[in-house]
Image (cartoon, rainbow, N blue to C red):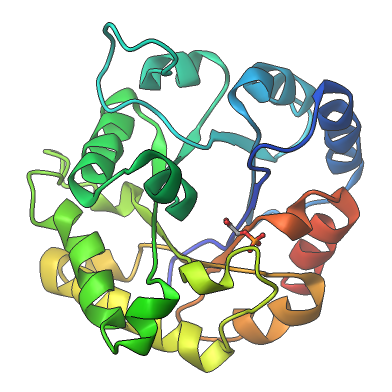
Length: 255
Ligand code: PGA
């Protein structure tokens, strides 16, 4: 039996301002969120504290969209793992494809960010996924294996062996913000492959506890079918999470 709790994560990217964040949080506080699921929201850095405070009476949790891989230092414009903790963050995205694209983040750096998150007691979500060209070239599984194993092959494992503190988000780049969603079969195939690679490195038992989220144009209209797949444990939602009603609708339909 799986012990994985579902996770519904809203990635707001570089959207929403203070007023909108406050209004959004009020809607979330009014909603009755399922006990068994994690509901996560990822605002831009300036609103982390504001959102964490506004959600104090809700079970929803706050995460950051990125972090620096070092604990502190001379890195103008960057934010350290401990600073995120101070702002009320529990979660952090590592290696989102837009960070890889806009900031040249490569696998080794992403692995270092996951390790930095662990050191600070944050829960990292490792984002990975193939581009359209990679899918068309038939290299999807090679890409996914490389992106996942750069973390698992390195000294990334926590000394305590708590690899279960890892969450993976499969986000095919061709489905992000394009309106094109992976079919449930395509997504399940990728998720099953990722779980198999996790089992290879961590053992079956540990791999069975790692939540694997799907991301890429998830919306109320397509979430149910995706969610019915065995290895899809929740979603990382961009566009559709900007409207609290649509975000909460997705959670509702999957609960
Ligand atoms: P999307 O974004 O839902 O707008 O496709 C998903 C993501 O980038 O996390």
